[in-house]
Length: 162
Image (cartoon, rainbow, N blue to C red; front, top):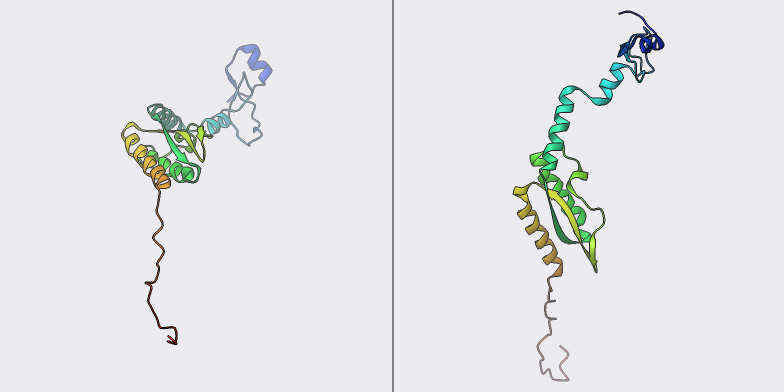
């Protein structure tokens, strides 16, 4: 490769140039005239072409997800988030938690409950909504305490020592 300075490459209108000196990350590769950044640094930052294809594929799959809204108690929120994430990872293993829930704070707070927005693939929405409904109903169910045991009344003679 011909060693050339950036100023000369700009004057000649070249897209890349080679200085023969390593960049600050110790790469010995051509640099882009416009930014002065070395090709290898850009390649490492952007990832391999396969990584770029996987990233585009993931973004496309995430855009296919639907948003659904459920009412949950705050105590059940973390548990439900993990279930939604695990369910989505069956379809897309590299999905991030940010892609699975769309609102950090609950909307329409009503006492200890709130409405939360989650994202999932269309085939899983109904089962996740049913699960959320079961979690909600389990906390709302009125559980009656068992009756207090009372010993039957007996007529012991007062002089009986028992």
